[in-house]
Image (cartoon, rainbow, N blue to C red; front, side):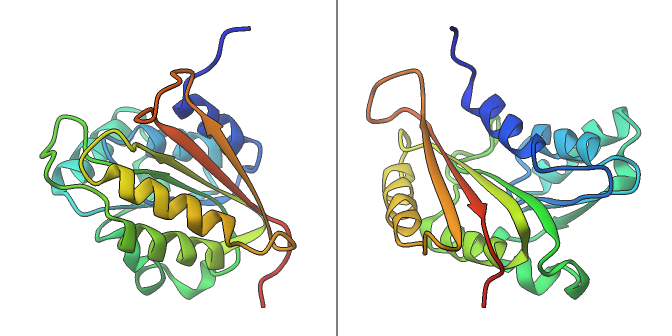
Length: 194
């Protein structure tokens, strides 16, 4: 059986948690592929919130949405994913069905601008608070670039520290068996957090 890409694996996992009317977050817009996927998946009554620190990522994402007439389903923020809780409306707290992260750098952009472990872990912890029961977080990590190894290792440690009565975690490895290969972390919320 041929293996699917980690991007497709993340989207398949998220798709199982989304329904028409769902709320979702793309925590790292990049070139807008996950944003478009989420906007299609939540339907006309759902909504997606997107975050990135680079204007180029917002422009690329908006153009993709516009080409599919999905721009009204998405609110884009030129803000770090670490600021999710400060930016999102209080009304979405505990009702987000899915949050997607695609770490590293913007493909085609400035490779010096990368996600960093401290802000990423802050953002994922915030995403855990935003999740509805049975919600999902996917994190595609790339250890094969400068800064990516440390970010991936800290993420793996953080995931191992989660309470298994609250969260189920899964690690999906790339089909390429080498240390610098991408990996997908999947986190599912079981119960309501205290």
